[in-house]
Image (cartoon, rainbow, N blue to C red; front, top):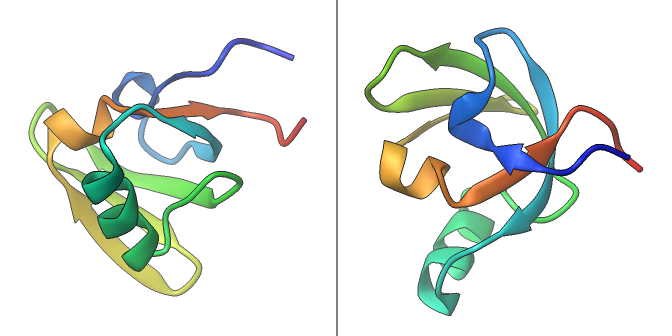
Amino acid sequence: MLNPSPLVSHQECSHVYVKKIVSDCKTQVRLLGLGIGIGSYLQILRNRGGDMVLANNNSRISLGRSIAEKILVSDDLS
């Protein structure tokens, strides 16, 4: 298994799995409310240096870079 890397380091159209969220409890709860938790499968729709737009099932989510840097992801589920 590769080490998880920050969400912001992945290219557009990538599909990733959330491995870890390095943040305070309040932010983790907020992300869970958006459907982003450990094991979530995300597609990166936009990553152009500003906010990021993600697809999670049938939802589109926009995240600021500061929060996206705290979400560690991997290309595989293991």
